[in-house]
Image 1 (cartoon, one colour):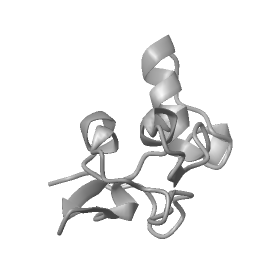
Image 2 (cartoon, helix red, strand yellow):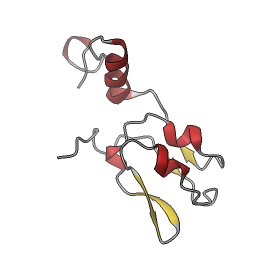
Image 3 (spheres, rainbow, N blue to C red):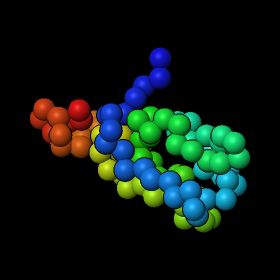
Image 4 (cartoon, rainbow, N blue to C red):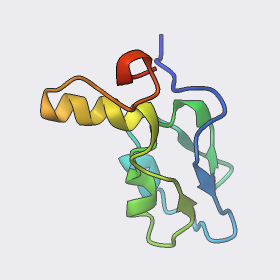
Amino acid sequence: MKLMYLKNVVTLNLDSDKCTSCGICLDVCPREVLAQKEKQIVIQDRDACIECGACALNCPFQAIKVRAGVGCAAAIIRGGLTGSEPTCGCGEGGGCC
């Protein structure tokens, strides 16, 4: 089973006019959110995006936009990296959803 982020809240956007289908975003995305279909990059699983920002930071054509570091996914990543409890302020007692 693939863990999912919250439905319909991801800030990820792909500008197909700027995208050259170089595939760098496919290599850096840890969740297989993007895919190449018929020689074009598409968002195949928006709700799997954890808004880490790797795709946008590595896109040489600025075709991808995402507000990295927002929401519970960022809190979980921060907690894992620092060894602390995840906290995004939206759950009970300031925890995570």
